[in-house]
Length: 265
Image (cartoon, rainbow, N blue to C red; front, side, top):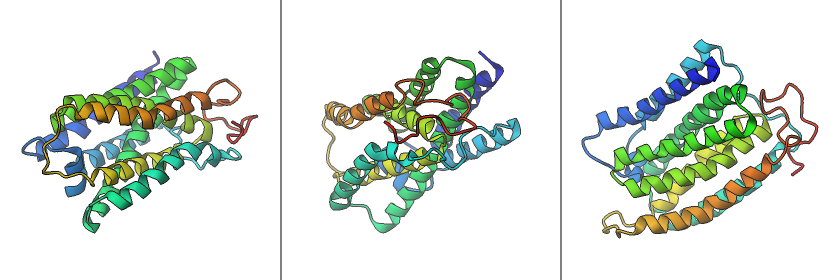
């Protein structure tokens, strides 16, 4: 393990602690994720993102993907998540019950979450792992870490089973996120996709009756729906990085465009 990978892991652990500890200090009791993102700024997420930016600047990490995608046809690899987003947005707009102020708050918070989580995993951790490990070991480490960190939601919500489902969904969608990060040679597109995904998910979730008692087997329904949504994304992500020719330059984002443009799938 290189020193950069070790430092990256430590940085992400501290990032996770900031993300978790700040809201627990501000909240008097357990709260649902839906309420957490609609009622106030997610200060833990904001603080954790600032910590990552400061650490990256001090460490001199200039290879985290903050560059415009330059691979010809890079936007073509976004077709599947964009299709999902369009469908969820239409459903959320017709069934959601968020007021304008809540929608604005959700937009702000999900934008921060998308930025912070992508910077932590597909930026900082991937930047260390890809330098030290073979491709699939680095890919697996980042994807597993991204899924596992979502179990922490149980500390805020008290819903252990639901947090486990969220972790599994994050693991599978995270594979697609990292694959898109690799294929576009940029972290910016997947930051936008991630933020929009979270926003539409909360928009859809706002249609439920918050006063209704939750069935004890709700997590099973969430698991099935999650697998239906993220299962194809997981397979798509693996397909995007299926061989060396399509993931050319993965170790350093490539100084030059790869031989096979991102659009050649």
